[in-house]
Image 1 (cartoon, rainbow, N blue to C red):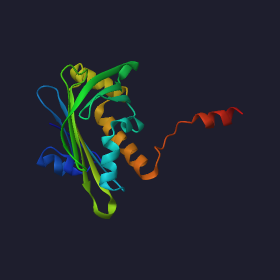
Image 2 (spheres, rainbow, N blue to C red):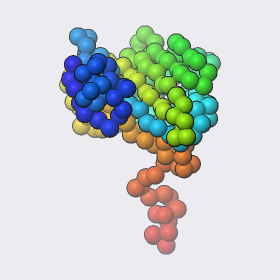
Image 3 (cartoon, rainbow, N blue to C red):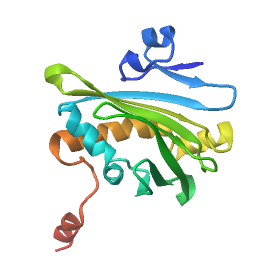
Image 4 (cartoon, rainbow, N blue to C red):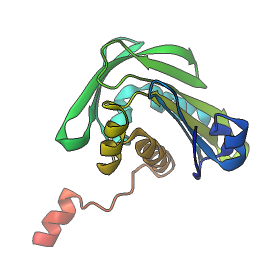
Length: 191
């Protein structure tokens, strides 16, 4: 087990030692990676769950997700950016769901990046909702693939943290803050 400090609450840690030290990133003997990230969002739990459950919304704040096609109420097809301008794809199935609280999924056989995980929504009183994302994935090409993904900022641990922050921004302010110029700003600058 490799311990990594992070700003995520200790509740996302896999072990008692991790809960004391911060965030746990668990490497198992098959090369799978376990990532946990948590954010508190000042919105009602039911609203956040409903937004997330409509998978067409996810590319609005998940930077690497190009698109998600709904195949049925429990199945989706994901197209995600990968290092080197490539994409990876997989079908995922919801394996457990508690309305307003929890969604767990697993990629189907043949996925470019085998993965599974969950998203959990818990009331945080006057502070809104605690949203915890847990992801297990098998990096393509093992350790080398993970290093390449990190270099290109496409590694799931990096993306999970950024995506949850963008989700928080979108839900609390109605937009995702960016340093990129909009088309309108570019036209005004040229004009």
